[in-house]
Length: 274
Image (cartoon, rainbow, N blue to C red; front, side, top):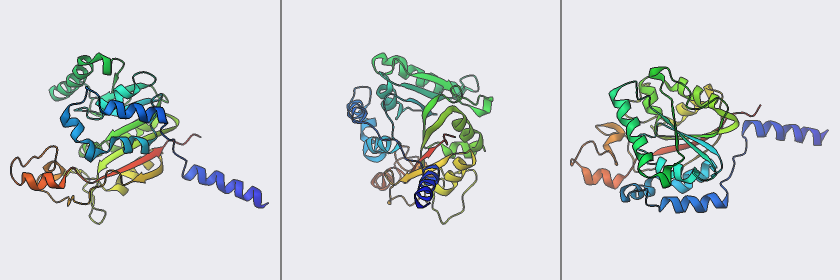
């Protein structure tokens, strides 16, 4: 009886808090090689100290043989790492803007495709799919085909347009059963109300968890890898006051550079296997 109860408890516990995959040694070695690669500018490499790519991707359990989708890469900081990392034994898909939707969307989509074309040795197998609710295009890849979806500093963009629910639902549908979702976002103070439009760029961690759980995800774990206690989150132009944007220009530039990039939460979710 006791043994059966213990087994039942273990089963329930594994469903509530499923174990995370671990990055294998070969992927970690290649990741470090890619981070030092010529496809990355000195400016991109300088941000490693703020964005902790090795620690973050290890936390997510990424491996180079996976099918990985990156949501709205825009300037492509993580793209410069993920696409070359997945090139030989995995699959990298950038969930891009719809170039037919607007001139701005076309500029960003064209810039991403130009990046891929500029260095075929690094990006030759990178793919793009469209995920753009404003144009009613809601799937970057066929349902149930991705092992992992990653999104970096994007939730506030969806909240500004009230599209967070449709985005998280798209991720859930696109992942295989048991697939994982990795999230990094600027963290709002937990003791202040969440602006539903996230106009400052900051999002409460509990609000992000609720969005993912509403779509059906289970939280696996959280990390302080990308935390920054120097970030006071009370700037005149929101999170964009800080590096790398520095929207105040030269005003208090040294002060904001000393703070560094924003305080961020890092979360891993899983789509239930059942």
